[in-house]
Image (cartoon, rainbow, N blue to C red):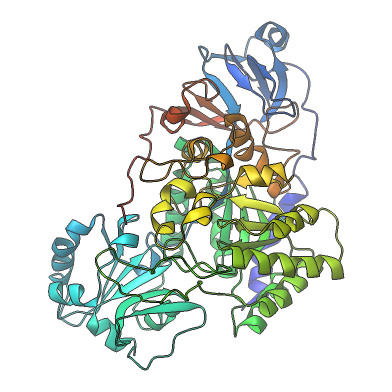
Length: 587
């Protein structure tokens, strides 16, 4: 890695950080630039006070109170906006998103929106290129997770081309020609950090998950994008959050070589995009600890460097697999046979499968302890309860050996509720949980393939975390984004099948709003600047057409976002963006 280049790429951010507003800064006196009034202003302060007007100056909250009080700040040039009784909230902060420099993973050149379009689109793409050329496509979520084609189905459609289809970034499927080029056979060893899905005779069926993807990605053509194309892709992905009312995002995993491109995007267009915090993704795994340590040492900075638009956050590492495969790590085996396709038992684990460990404890400890020692915040991906238990043990050891106040280390996801003693340890260590409430709805179809009973009912716990004093921050991950969808899911606990799962884990609308505003702001050390409508904080706001505290809870995901305001500037003002209603197929 070119350490000099990486440090140079961040030098401008280092200088810019010296010019940011100090926490709790008092805005200048005089006249307000903008006053929003006749609104239901939900401050989301400590008492969740509600008032009717907000005054803004120089991109910050100048005053909060009644319209009559704030009229004293109005001058001839003050812009006064009548919100006609609509709700004004702090801008939503999506605490867990993913973006990439390419428009599609793995250099895919086409999309397959639904399974019934598979044959038509593959045949059309094959006709465009000579026989023997690769076809690399992307299947749309959620369909591909439950209806991923196998090698034989792909062979029947495209016999003369190697084919690879990606389902997000976690799972791939290959046809026979691609399997041959990847060197896969009955004798190919199973990677420790992934799965090669096989038939009962052990022959690869073409589906590769997590670490097994390397067999395919090392042989597919994936030409590098130009910097201009990469920047355009990043800009477009980030701009999509504005119609959702999102004013800040925590990007949960970028590689060191992507930093300069994201910096370029914010230097050029940062004033028209959500504020961003970048977590650096490291992959120590089983054999790459020294590489990850070298990358860590080469960064030259630590959590917090940057400015009020773009800064560095935590070091991100993934301890186990994913829900949508499923191969998350559990303490006891999955309850049912794991199926990667609803039409056939491709994977028969005979009741002894409990997921995949992507990073063993010793590897995690070596990198986490050094990162902590250097002053980095840590964010550890833990879906299954087995991964949660081990990650907490590692973090406890790190904090015991190198005590540090206000570390704000956190667990991403925590989807399978861990044992009581682990929850108590999370609270004791003051670890934060970056959780995705929409998992209860969207990923429920995949959970049914692996767990049942109490593990299914209490998956994606929310109430039990809050009751133990554990801080939570909400985000959407790579699922359909949108804080209103997440708030709806946290309050209603509905699965894809319309059933309520774990009603005792539901939380209130007010608590869910806090988790999508103040929670992520605290996670990224921004609670003095963002997350509530209070004097001195940045004027990052969202206007909703209706009151989320008074509508029927089942309608929360249908509320219209009318304005998204960052630093006092309206970056989105438009008609209602259609909410996400598509449901994954029943497994």
